[in-house]
Length: 267
Length: 267
Image: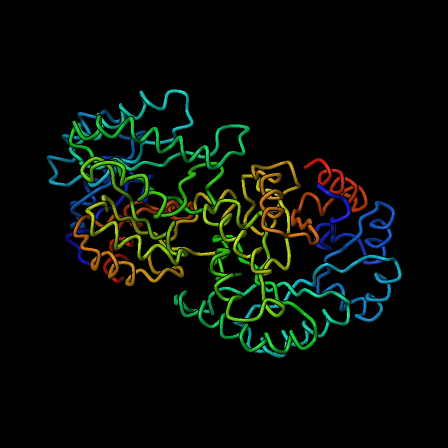
C-alpha cells in the first residue's frame, strides 16, 4: 500500500516512549501517527503536540473517546475532544463501551450511545474535530463496545453532519461481516469514513481476546481487498496500523516498527 | 422455562458417560438429550439408541455434521445423517467449518458451504433428517464456522424444503446481533427453526474462546427475552442447554446437571 498514507498507531509499539516513536517514524519515513490519550497526557498535551509537529508528523487520530457507561462520560469526552484539537488532529475515535454493570439490555445500551454522541457532536464540530464511531467485533459487545457493525455505527453517524460524526473502518473488527463492504461504500459516498485502521486476524485468540490484533499478513484477512474497497469508496485518508499484541509488545519496539512498515508495504 | 421442553446437550456434562447421563436425566425429569457423534460412536450407535429409547428420553439433536473443508466431508456427513436416523432424532446440527488452510477467501468459503448443503439436503430428507445450519459467533469465522449470522444460515436453508434444511438458533452465538430477532421471526414463520440452544455469555473469554459458553443466568444474555422471541416465532420444540465450559467440566457431572436443570427452570 501507499507509504505516503501510512500512520502507525501508538499502541502498536507501546513499548516505545513518545520521543522514541517520533524518532523512529521519522527515520523510517512514516508520515503519521495515531496517538492515545493516556501516554499523551502523561507526556503533556502541549509538549506532545510540539514534539510531533516539529518532527513533521501528522496526528491522524486520537484514541479514544467513548465508554459512555462511565459516570463522567460527558466531561471526559469533552476533554478528549479538547485534547484532540490541541494535538492538531481532526479525528477522535469513539469506542462506545459495553453493557452497564448488571445490565442485560443491549438495545437500551445502544440507544444510550446514540444519545450520548448526539450530545457531543456539536461540541466536537465547533472545535474542528470529527467523531469517528468505531464498531468493535461482536466478541466485545458485552464489555467494551455495544456497537458491533459498521451498519450500526453509520446509522448513528448519519443523524449528524459528516464533519461532526463519521465512522472508523477497522479490518480486524469488520472482516467477517458480509454486510460491511456495502456499508463501507455507503459511508465513503457520504464522506463518513473518518479513520481506516488495519490489523490482521489470527487464531487462537488469547484469553480475554484483547491482544489478538495480529501483524499484517500473518492472519486470514484479505487486506488488499479491504484497501481496494476503501479506494472504491473514495477514501483517500491515512491508513493506520493498530496492533494490540502481547508478543509484539514484548519485543524491541524499533524492530517491531520496522517490521510493521515492511508488512504494510508488502500488503 | 417449561421443563417439558428441556433437553440437555451431552457436551454440557461431557464428564458423564452416556449411561450416567441417561440415568441422571431420568432422575431429574429431563425429557430430552442432545448427543454428539464421537461419544455415541464410541459407545456404539445401536446400543446408544436402545439405551436412550428404553429410558424414554428423546434425542433432540445429533451434533454435528458440517466442517465442509475436510477432504472427506461428503462421506462423513452422509454417515452423520445415517447416525442421526439410527439414533431416532430428526435433526442434525451443521457447523460449517472455517476457511480452508491458507485461504483468505471468506465469500468463496461461504459459497462452498451452500453448495455442500445442497448436495446433502436430498439425502437427509430421504432419511427423515432435517439439517439445522448453525451460525456460530463471528469470532469463530476463521477457524470453525464461516456462517456467522442467522440471516446467512437462513439464506442457505431457504434454497431447500424446510423439512430438509433449517437453522439452529443459539443464544450464545446470536445475542449480539440486532438483525437476529427479525431473522428468528422469519425462520419461525417458515418452519425453519429446527433447533434452539441456550448458553449464556460471560467475560473474560478463555484462550481460544471455545470453552466460554456459560451457565444460564451467569452472563449478560437476556434469556427470557430470547425464549419469548422463539415463542412469538411459533417455535414449540425442545430447548437444549449446551454449555462448553472447562470449569463445569472439572466438577461432578451429576451436580452440574442438577444445577443446569435448576438454572433452566429459573430463567
